[in-house]
Amino acid sequence: MRHAVSKSLKRIITRTCPKEFVFTELNVLISCQTMIRRFLFVFLLLLAFLTAFYYIPSYQQELQADGWDGYLESQAKAIVDKMSPEELAGQVIHVAIPGKTLDQTAEKEIQEILPGGIILFGMNLGTKQEILKLNFELQKKSLEASKLPLLISVDQEGGRVLRVKDGVTQFPGAMALGQAKNADYAYKVGFVTSFQLRKLGLNFVFAPDLDINNNPDNPVINTRSLGSTPEMVSKAGIGYEKGARLGGAIPTIKHFPGHGDTNVDSHLGLPKIDKNLEELEKMELIPFKESIEQGAEVVMSAHILYPKLDPNLPATLSSKILTGILRERMGFKGVIITDAMEMNAISVHYKDSDPGVLAILAGADILLMTSWGKTTRDMRDQVLNAYKKGTFQKGERDLLKEAAFRQILLKLKHGIIYEFSAKKSNPKSLSPMEEKEITFFQDQIAEREKIFLEIFSPNLNTDVSRASIVSFPETFVPNSVKPEETIFAVKGKEFEGVLAEKNLANASAGKITALLKENKFKRIVLTSFSQLELDLAAGLAKRYPALEVVCLHYGTPFLKLNTLSNLKILFSFSPTVESKKALLYSVVERTTPVPVVDLILKSSNEKTVVK
Image (cartoon, rainbow, N blue to C red; front, side, top):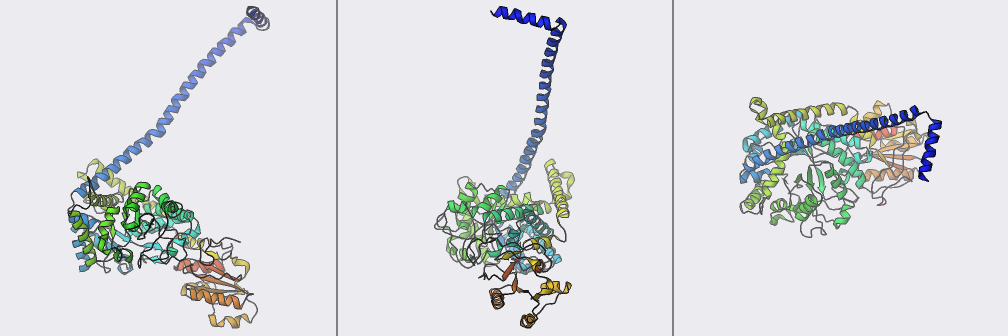
C-alpha cells in the first residue's frame, strides 16, 4: 500500500513539475540550510563577543576595585601595626577645644591625647579665614604629634543646627527637606553642604539625622528629623547622605537604632524605648538599613536604653545592639561613632562602669568627647589601662586595633591622609600603586569641583526653602485674597525687608483693630516662633471669624495647634533667612496651593491628611 502511494505521488510530481525544477528546489533547500547554519554560527560568535565585551571590563573593574581597596587596607594595617598603645588609645577618641585659635589648651590636648579627631562648635567657628587657619593649624599640630591627620567634625544639619555661619550655604533643616518630598533637592543640599565644609577644612559632618520623629513630644530630635514615617526619612536621608559622601565631608547617619520615639532628652537623662527587634525593623531601623545598603560609611549610636534588646546597657554600650544588630544582622562594616560621652545618659548613669571601654567592646570605633582637659584625659587613661590589661583582646582579635584600623581606613578612602601626605612632593620615588593613589584623589577632587558647578546655583537655597513650606490644618490657597486686601503685621527684619521690596505696608499688632474698621480687608498675616505667638494668632481668629488669619511659623510645629476653620498656619521648620522669606513668598507671590503638612502633630496625635 505504502509503495503504491509513493508511486502515485511520484507520478503527480512528474506530471506537474519539470524534472529540472525539482532538482533546483532541492539545491535551494540545501543551500538555505547551509546559510542558516552559518548565520547561527556568526550570531553565536557575535553574542559571545558582546557578552565578553560587557562582562570582562566589569570583571576587570571589580579586580581593580579589589586591588585598590586591598591597597588602602594594607596601608591602614601598616599604620596601625606601628602605633603604640598610647597612640591607639588616643586615635579612638575625638575631643573639643575652647576657642577659635590653636591656643595652649588646644595644643596640649593634641599633644597629650593624640586624638583621632576634633569636633568644632559655634564658639570655634568665625569667618571663613579664621576657620581655614584654625583647621590648618590643628592638622599641622596633629601631624607633628601623631603623624596622622584629624577628622575635624561639625554639626551642620541645617535649620536650627548651623554651626558654620560663613562660607557654607544656610539651608533649611532636615524636617523642611523631608516635607519638600524631593530626593534630588536632598542630594543637592547634602552635596553642597559637604563640599563647602571640606573647602574650609571640615572633613566630617554629623548629618543626616535618620531618626523618625513619630513622637510629637520628643524634646531633642524634633525638627532635626526628616519626618514621621520611614518612607519620608529614607527618601530624603539617603539622598542627602549620597550627596554628602561625594561632596568631601564624610556624612554620619544617626542616632542608631533610633531616637525619634522618646520624650526624654539624652543630654539630660536616659531615654527608654520599649520596643522589640521586630517592631524596630518595621519602623526605626528601615532608614538605617536602606542607607547602609546604599553605601553609608559612618553610623552614630544613640544613648538610649532598649530593654527588650538589652535590659542593662544603652545602645552605645551594648554589644547586642552595635555588634549583634548593626554589624552582624545588618552587615555594616564601616565606622561607628558614639554620641557625646559626656551626655547625662552615659556620664551620670554609667560613670563607674568605664563607659569608654564598654563602648569599644560593644563595637564602637570612635568615642566622641565634647570637652577637653581632665574629662578627655580620664577617658584616654580608661581606654589605655584597659588595653594594657588585655581587655580588648578577644582570642586573636584586638578590638582596639580594629577600631583604629576602621577610622584610619576611612581617612585613607576619603583622601584625608593623602591631603597631608609628602607623596605629592616626591612623585619620582613613587610605586605604581602610589602613582595610582595620587591620580585617584586628584580625579576625585576634580570630579567634586565639576559636580558643584553643575548643581549649585544662587537660587538653590531659595528653591529648596520654598518647596518645604506646608500648611496646617488644610491646604492654603494664597491667591484667593489679593495683597491689597491683606493686613500684614509681621515681625523681623527678613519679613519686613520683603514687604518693603514689594511696597506693601506692615502694621503693628496694635493697629489691626483700627484697620479692620475700614471693611476692605479679608486676611491678616502674622509671624510666630513660640506657643505664645501661635495662641495670639488663634485668639485673633476667634475674635474675627469672618477673616482669614495666616500665621507664618518658623519654629517647631510640635506645639498645641488650634484647628479653627479661619486659621491657617504655614510651617517652614527653620529660622534661616531664606526660610522666612519663603514663608512670606507663599502668601504674597505664590500662585499654587500650599500642601498640607505631612507629620504626626500634637493637635490630634494622628497623621494630618488633606480633608
